[in-house]
Length: 186
Image 1 (spheres, helix red, strand yellow):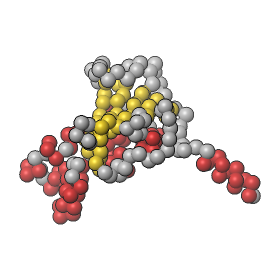
Image 2 (cartoon, rainbow, N blue to C red; image 1 turned 120 degrees about the vertical axis):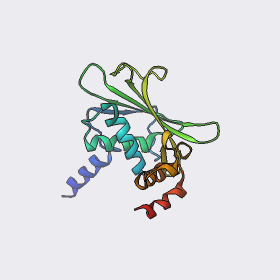
Image 3 (cartoon, helix red, strand yellow; image 1 turned 45 degrees about the vertical axis):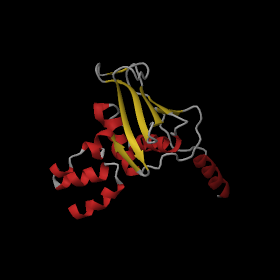
Image 4 (tube, helix red, strand yellow; image 1 turned 135 degrees about the vertical axis):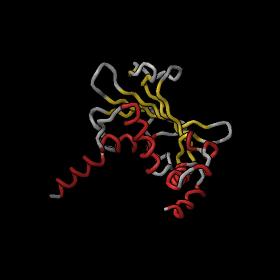
């Protein structure tokens, strides 16, 4: 019994995370450090929609596929280490994603997702080409918050929003002090 338990423990712990056969996580150096401090809510909310559903990029992703990719992003992406993800899909080209953290001149950090999806031609290119019409998303990182560029407070007219939209705007903007205002709108 102990031998079976030992073998099972070794098998489970020998993998940093489960990875489907159709998903390849790669980087120059995979050092587990949990670099991203963004709350899992924001990672899931933005990245699941933007990398899987929007543009119909990978709608057949299983829960395990999504969790595997999100965990790899949270664990391995850093300023020094971008992460590349290749998703095998039917057709002639796989879906490629490159995640990177960039520092702005004013000291802010951005999480950027580059893909090989050409939005103009509506097809997967052979490689990620940042200069072409490739589908790219970027988010501001601020402690445990992650904010899509269009959800920044300077892009929102809070006075013109309905209560549900105002609560969402407060939750998704970069200002943690707005989060406490949500309770009074429930």
